[in-house]
Image 1: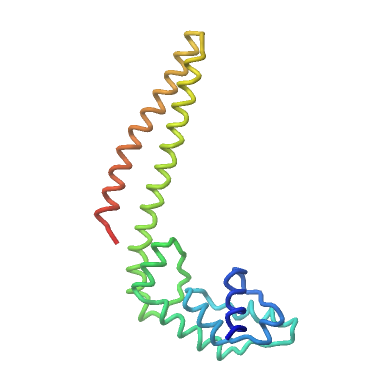
Image 2: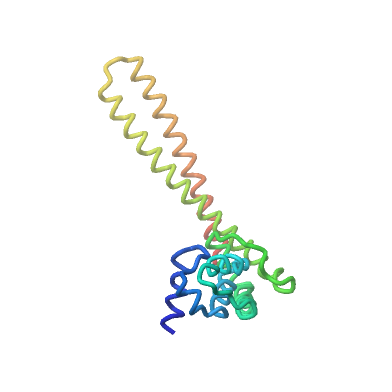
Length: 183
């Protein structure tokens, strides 16, 4: 069990398909395939085979495939589709045709939720930036002695103030959409 956890944690942390010689020799190919399936990954058997070739080990294709199929059955559910979309994950077209329709409907719903949240976050960040610019320009105006330069700074500050007001209106609308959509 410890070996399997070590193998899976190494795969998880590495983010790539490469395996060490020890992992290749002790590989639980069913478990590796199941994990790849549960994560909605395309088959990485070829990558594992390349990594294990140096150790003179061939992956157990049947075990990997059986495990991956089981993992994909767990992944290709409407609930998992929504979660994957909501987390902004990409979909690799891995679900069987009979499961894909329901999965994709919820994936798209979750993805829309993700995009809306991202839009809200981006706008909030812009508003913070506009506020800093307004403060910076106000400070410069206070130090400026030339009337023409002060007018120029005032116009620039007013432009940022308009952007911030418009942004606040957009933010309220986006947040209302967020609340209406709900989870």
